[in-house]
Image (cartoon, rainbow, N blue to C red; front, side, top):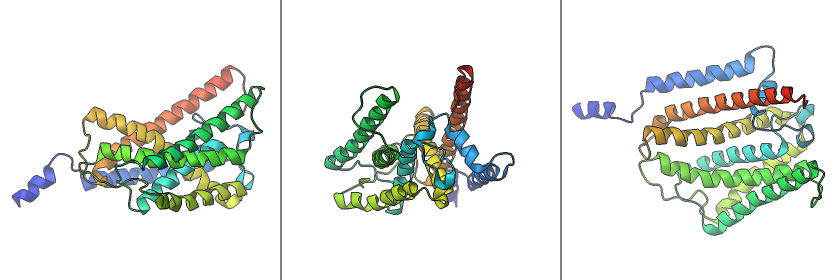
Length: 273
C-alpha cells in the first residue's frame, strides 16, 4: 500500500481528473468552432490559417466550389505531415527515436529541395522575372506532400528523444519498403485534393489545419519542456498531454495574432485579397 501511494504521488504523474478536464475542454472548443452562428466552420478555418498562409485565390484548390483554408502548397505540406504522422503511429513507430538511414534522408531532402525550387520559380513569375517553367497547383500540391512526408519522418524522432525517459531504437522509416508503405496514403491525398470533389472539402480543410497546428505546437512544446526542465522524463502519453495542451493553446493564440496582424497590414496598405 505504501509503495502504491509513493507511485501515485511521484513527480511526473498526471491526475486522471486533469486529463478528463482537458479532454472536455477540447471537445467544447471543437463544438464552438462548429456550431457557433454567423460564420461557417470553413470560414473560421480560413481565418485561423490566414496569418500563416497567403491564401492566394489562383494558388488554391476549390473542392465543391469552396476555397480550401490553405493554398495548394501549404495544403500539401500540412496534409502530408499529419497523414504521415498518423500512419507512423498506426504502424507502431510513434515512439521511434532514430532517423531513417542516410540514403532515405537524402531522398526526403530532395523532396524539400523540389518544393524550394518550385516555390522560387513561382515567386519569380509573380515578380515578372524570368522563370524555369509555368507553375501549376498540382505541382505545388505534390512538392508540398513530399515535404510534409519529410518533415514528419525527420521531426518525430527528434521530439521522441526530447520526451521519453526510455530509449526506442526504432527508426521512423527503417527501410525502403517501409517508405513505400507510406506513399499510397500520400498518393490518395494527392488525387483526392486534385479531384476537387465537394466530398473532400471538410476532411482536407480540417486535416491540413490540424497538421499546421501540430507543426506550430511541436515548436512550442520544445520550448515549454526546455523551460520546465522536463526533458526525457515522460513515460506515458497521459503525462505529456498537459504540456501538449499548453503548446496547442499557444499555437492557436499565435495563429490568431498573426491573422489579425495580417488583416491590419492589408487594411493599412489598402490591399484586397
